[in-house]
Length: 55
Image (tube, rainbow, N blue to C red; front, side, top):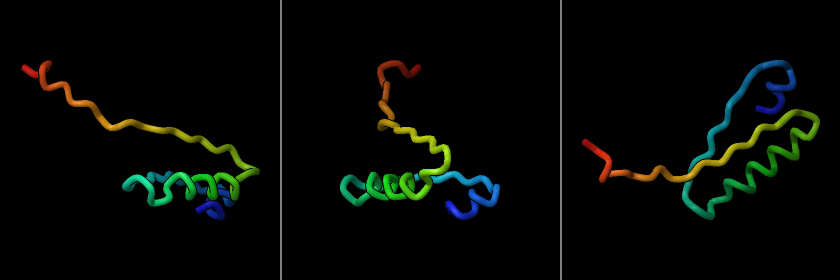
């Protein structure tokens, strides 16, 4: 993936999984491998359910 980006291709990576399976470690590894590139990192939270606001 990183090699493809170095040649000018675009890529998106979505990492999803249970706690403790190594998602953060994988992202840190990829970020270190791409040290010469701009890396955008985002984090999300589990969606909250607002049942009381439903019609």
